[in-house]
Length: 229
Length: 239
Image (cartoon, rainbow over all chains, first blue to last red; front, top):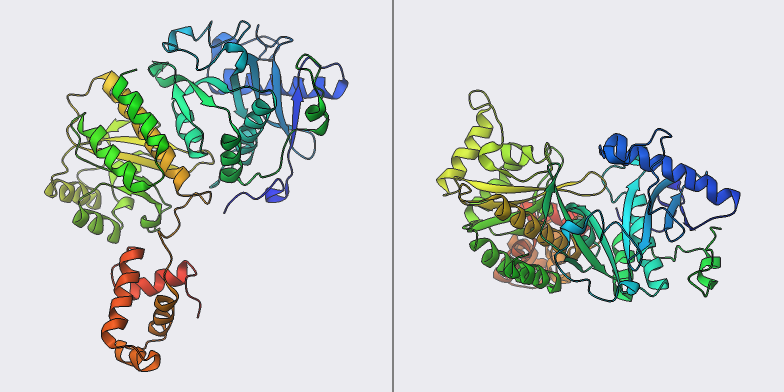
C-alpha cells in the first residue's frame, strides 16, 4: 500500500529544524536526538569511537553550523533524525572520511552540505512498507536543501543508501570507490538537489505536502537562528 | 572508481524502461564473466514471485519452471538472502544436502540449465522488504574490488528498477488489458467456452482465442484459467 500523506497508520509526524537553539522545546528535542544517536550508532552499530560516558552522541561537528532535522511523533517523541553540516567549514566528509573521496565535489563547497547521522528510532522498524520515518527524513532533507539553495548533498554510508536513494528517483554519484569498513561496504557519494529530485521523492513516498515549518520558510538569512515550531 | 563502472552507473540512472536496463546489465556483467541474471523482490512464504520480478535475464524455460513451481521458496540461494546483507557466492548458500531434497532438486535443475555457479547480492530495503540481484556464472576469478563493483552495479540497477516500477513497491501488472479482452475474460470466468463467447459477442471463436492469448502474453500468465484468476486478483475484471 502506498504511504499517503502524513497521517499514515493513524500517526502524524512533524519536522523540526533545529540549529543553535535557545528555546526549551528545541533543546529537549536535541537531547532526545543526541541520546538516540548514541543508542543507534554506539550501542547498535558499534561505532565505539563515538561512545561517551553521558550516553549522548555529540561530536565536534555538532556546533553552531550544524542543522538537525528531527521528525517527531504526535506525542513529541523524536522518531528519526539526521544532521546537516556545511562543506565550506570543517566537516566529516573531508576530515574523518577523506580517504573515501577520490573525486571532485560537483560544485563549490558553499553550494552543498554533508548529510550525516541519519537514523530512525530503533523501536520503529515497520513492516512491509517504506518506513514512514525514513521516508519523511528523505523528503525533509531534499526540501531543506532546496530551500537553502544547495545544489548537492554529500553522504558517507553503507552502499545500501545507493539503492534507497535511487529507488526514490534521486541521482547519486559516487565520490570514490566503495571500501569495506569493519566488514561493511561503505561509500562516499553526492545526491543532486533539484526540484525534480524533490518531486520524485514525494511521489515515491506519498508524502506530498511540504514538511518545513512556515517560520523556517520565511527566514531570509541563512545565519538566522531557525527555530522549530 | 573505474570509468566503465561510473559511466554504466550514470547510464542506468537515465533509463526510463526496464528493457534498456536489461541491455545495460547484460553488457556490464559480461565484463565480469557473467551471462545471465535476475533482479527481483522476494515474497513471503507461499506467494507467487512473479509480481515481484523487476527484471529477468534468465533463460525463458528456466524462468517458467522456477516461477510456476514456486522454487523461490525452496531455493537455498533465495533463502540465504534473508540471513545476510553481504553479497555471496551461490556455493556459500547453506542447505542440508542430505535431507533438504527440494533445495537439492532446485540446485540440480539449475545445473541442468547451465547455471552451476553464481554471485548473489541481497538487497535489504527500508521497511524490512527483501530483494535480490543474482548473477549466473563463475565466481572464483573475482577479487574483492570486482565484488564491490558488482555490488554497486546491482544496487544501482535494483534501485532504478524499483523507482521505475512505481510507488506501490510491488510492480503493477505490466500493462492492463483492453476493454474487449476484459469482456471476454469475464465471460470465460463464468465458464463460457470460446464458441459460446463468440455467439454472445458476435466475434469469431478464433478472434476470441486471439484476445485471450494477447491478454495472457501481456500479463505473463500460463493458460486461460491463470489469466482469469490474475485478472480478478489485480481487479482488471470484476464479476
